[in-house]
Amino acid sequence: EYFIHLVEEEEPDSAPSERRKRAVDNVKRRRHKDPVFVNAAKNDIRQIVKELGRKQGVLCLSSDPKNVMMWAHYADNHEGLLLQFDFATIWQIRSLANCGPFP
Image (tube, rainbow, N blue to C red):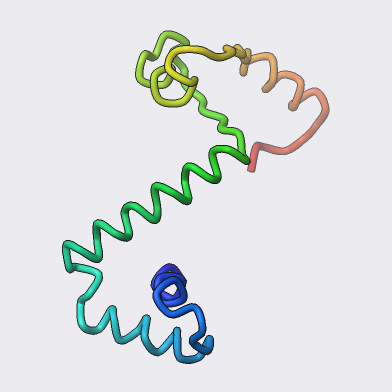
């Protein structure tokens, strides 16, 4: 699907069936290994991630509340909120409620 999206970006007026054919052809020609293509794809992916980051939140879990890497990467450079969960209590509540195991 991503390669079809790239063909659409290059040729916005092309028909969907033609985009699929071009995408398959690009993969067969190993265009996805071309450094210029790879850099363009990386830039596209970065842009998509930035846009999603503006619209979506992120939930990251760690058993270590002082995990510097988690805070640096996911908490807006060491700013954020820490929620602590007591899983022993959660397990007790689940067993008392006769709920099955977590999926």
